[in-house]
Image (cartoon, rainbow, N blue to C red; front, side):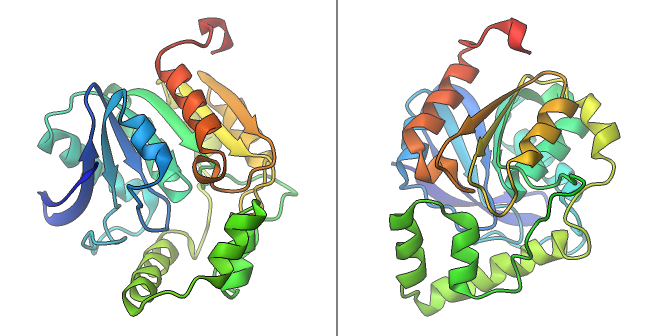
Length: 262
C-alpha cells in the first residue's frame, strides 16, 4: 500500500506517494489524478522503491508561479532527488509527465539511470494532426484517452464529486499553462541527442491524443532507445494493458533486452 504525504520540496509543498523496496523509481504523472491503487503501480513497487509524484500545479501539489513550460520543472526535480538523497534514479513518465521526464534527462543526464517514456507529450511530426484536448466535452476527451470500450464508457458515465471536478479543473489549468501556446518543443530534434540514459519508449497503437507516429520521432532521435508498440491500446497503456506494460518496464529495467538494441 502506498503512503501518501505532503512534502516540502524547495519552495513548494508536493504530494508524493511512496511504496516498495529496491532501486528508486520516480513516476511523473500525466495531467490526470495520480491513482496509487491501480495495479500497474503496485506491480512496480514489488521490485522498486516507487515515488509517485503529482507535478507542482497538479493534484494536491502546490503551484510554482514561475513554471511556464515543461523544462522549468527541471529545478524542482533536482531539489526532489536531493530531498530524498537520490543520486540517480529510474525515471518513468506518462504524457506531460513523460515530457517533463525527458526535459530532465536532457538537462540532468547524470541523475537518470534509465528512462521510460509512456506516450510522452512534446513532439512535432509534420503532417500528423494533434487534436485540441481542451475544446471538447467529457465524452470527447475520454475518446482521445481510451481505446478500451469498457474504460471509455466508465469515463463517460462517471459522476464526479465537486472535489473531483475541482481537481480536474486545476489539472487542466496547469496543463494549459504548459502547452496552450505550443504543445511541442521545437528544440527536441537538436536536444534529444543529449539523452544518455538507456530509454524505453512505450506507445499505444490506437492513441488518438498523440498518434503513434510520435513514437517514431522519439525513437529515431534518442540514440539509446528502444520502442515498444502495444496493440489495441490508447493513450494510457499502463491502465488499459497494465500487465503488458509492466512486463516491458520490468524487463527493460532488469536489462533483459539485448544491449545491441540500444
